[in-house]
Amino acid sequence: MERLFISDEGGSPQELMPGQGLGMQSGWSPDGRSIIFSLENLGFSAHPAIHALDVGSHRIPTLPDGEALFCPRTSPNGRFLSVADQRFTKAGTV
Image (cartoon, rainbow, N blue to C red; front, side):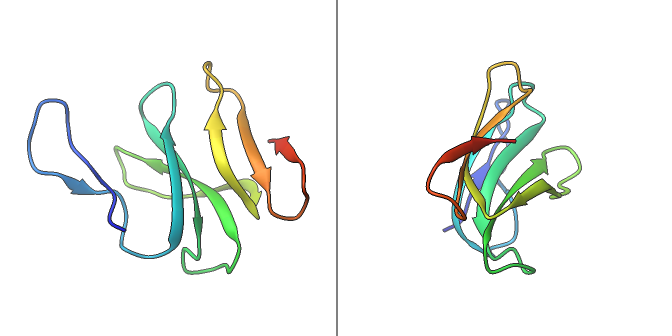
């Protein structure tokens, strides 16, 4: 599945990231600078992990301790993420 974003001022859609990986679940950070997402197989892991796409630079770091976590939801103030953990049956926060 291809994920694109477009400026509210118009223009051409831009691809969020190369067409690699499965199961992208995404949401904007409250400040609008990043898209937080979980993705399986970004080229270095068979487990889902949480990443943050910096919209300005297009860098995609994996969040610290983000491996095996998925379904990220950002708190309204942007300080916390609610996540599901593949290793356990309960939800957690990082």
